[in-house]
Image 1 (cartoon, rainbow, N blue to C red):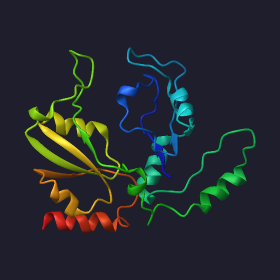
Image 2: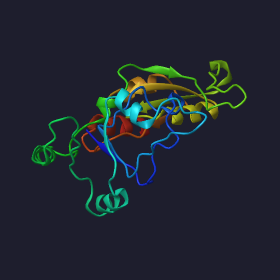
Image 3: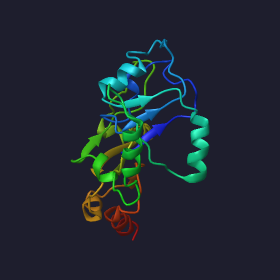
Length: 211
């Protein structure tokens, strides 16, 4: 439901690698960039940005003055947009689709991107010596943190593990009573997309955890 734009003009010059993934899929509906380099050059590169987007069925557009676009978004807030691809591209249809989008206000995206089931996370940050994300034994993690997944990034979970935390990730709509029953040392509220206002279940749970 959200199109992402990046202000840096050259995006894709280093290609992509699955090691940099922050979720099990791409949740963005589209990507807007200034320039798409013809060559991707980096020792970690496994796939060009263009191929990565195609593989994940994400539409994108280049050649846009993204810094000007960012100023508009900063001054006027999020705007409706539409990116079309294929043989039958119509400017009128794109404008109609953009105008017909109801907007993100009141749209609960947290429960859409959240995990459906709770799971344990013990993968830590990248280790240069082993060239991998090491999995830490639970016995070596003295703290237990429950993380509410409203769209959590994997690297945030890795950083919690690096700091000695065994992490239990729970769905966005998990009641506070279920979290407190785990007797955690801490509760982490993740980042996430969209408007937080309709997430009344999250507001209720957070209040109960704090009291």
